[in-house]
Image 1 (spheres, rainbow, N blue to C red):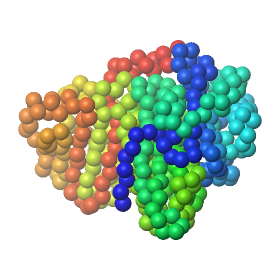
Image 2 (image 1 turned 90 degrees about the vertical axis):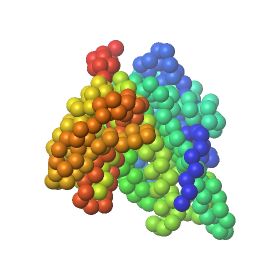
Image 3 (image 1 turned 90 degrees about the horizontal axis):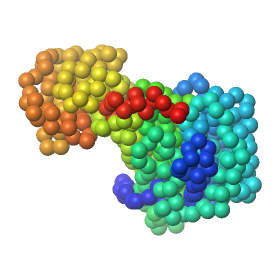
Length: 414
């Protein structure tokens, strides 16, 4: 199975167009609305926040994914989350979808919505409607349009996040066709496993059964977006949506066969890349953190152990200070809720050129402090734990905890 990385994002797949505008929702100096539209109806799949408090757009989109199961467009705003807005929030969703319906000549029940930003305020519907109309007239399938849309959904992100891949599937006549899958995401703070604070939109021209696509999305999320953490907070607005319009011309994927496996691998590739970009762009971050757990007894335990380390405030502070106090990694493994023998495991710092063992046979090992400092000074700081219990593994990603994180979130509303 060969997945080829290409440049681009949500407009890479055939039949998808994007646009953005400065609607003045909250920000006054940047674009803050984005629109995606497909030339053909799309099968849609999605997963959403595990937070009991769900923003109005999450409730709206869940209904489309679970009941309508089809979509033509997505409208996203940055700056205001439309969360904790009660019945008025759902009315705002309906008004936004209706505005898009009229502007694009598509059914309102096939308009997906996304919001990100401050919890509590209502959306300025006059600006939202004006933004929808502006974007409907400037939709484009160029790579530049996709990139601009990925920038429009940012809040405290410092960089936009997009990724695209191609792969081949058979057409109905047996010939090979190229299928494309691309995506964009935003996320920098309020990021924690079980869907992090994120909006992610993935488009593909693959023809695939909606139920199978939903299964693939739920499967892939476990080892991508649910394996990152910035600050331990799970948002009210987390949304991952995948739209498939079938315009590549492949024979429809209707069973869990080789075609499904290839689609899942492509989806995993894009989701993993976007997840790592989000973890590395955590608010105030100076380092990406990676924790890989190998040879665990179960996959679930491997995930728990890896997440525990990257979620530890002490480990994150250690990485920021470049202080090789690696006992903090051991401690975080110990309270992960997994039973293991500390005398058996081995822990390593993983550098670009060599690995450094700092724990073995139940004891912290003597190690070269200068080498450790050099490894902790790399942009990506990686740890490896060999559990020596089985053959399962998992990797989690996060970032260091810096002074700037507190500064950013101390005045987030202003």
